[in-house]
Length: 172
Image 1 (cartoon, rainbow, N blue to C red):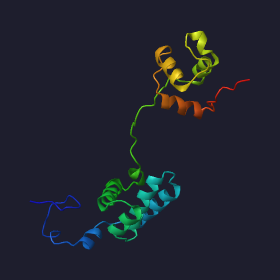
Image 2 (cartoon, rainbow, N blue to C red):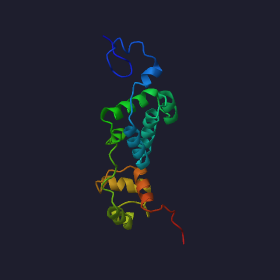
Image 3 (cartoon, helix red, strand yellow):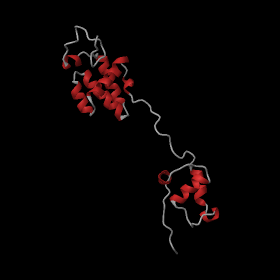
């Protein structure tokens, strides 16, 4: 026995010869579904969540799967997946994007106190042959002496984030 290619239902005599438009109408929505989706869309703060709600609401109002996919700028199969997510529990929150851990933050130990403490010191007193801190020198010092693993790029980003600026020394 085969399965229907869109809804994972067994192919029976009722749905074997269904056309695409007949299949799209197979998803039934109530007035309460439309109200629920519209209310969630009005409250949505996240753009991805809003886009998903809008596509499913469009389908609930009788729109086609192709048009919903076109306006959401995703593939048909993605809108179809969103539709199944919603119809499983009839809960708009099921369309929220899953939380993913992502890449861990770099240089967790690089806090404001450590930066201020290190930058206040003269590099010569620490044994370096430089009169001022440079990004590569500060990166090497933090990695070796302070046990704070940080890349030069991250260091520059963090210093900029907290309002520090690199300036060339002036000769007076």
